[in-house]
Length: 216
Image 1: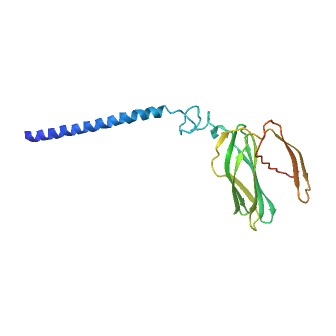
Image 2: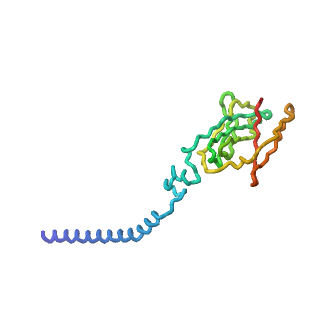
């Protein structure tokens, strides 16, 4: 009976030694690698791309000093209207007006979609594209020569295909003044002419002009 208890005691003692040895090895490597990694992690500089809401950010990597803005702190943009204009049988131009009331916020790249529907609300044509949204102004969108086949467009739908990424930016078009606007030959082939003048001392490159003419 004593021999049996002695064997159990010796086995328990050996097991405790193995557990103690394994624990010691684990603690050693945890200290060896954990302390430098912890120091590295907790001393990393805070940035706007670290996936953590820190600094003075109002969202994860948004707002505060970050170039990407928190959309919840901005005034909402609006699609004022979207329409299609028949150029000839089966061919349409689609246009939309996007209003952004935020003076210092814009979108560098926004992917959008035009959907053209008939009177029965059946999709007959669509067109995708990309645009920018200027700060503090209205940005027009134009897609030309959309093939609708032999169908007649009754309704035009415009939508953005993904959440917009709002960034700090200024409107470089503010120094531009457009004057001497004149429409000629309105009953045959209408033509619009105008003069654009840059009032700033810095040159402005890659300018695109879109003119929208309404009935009087």
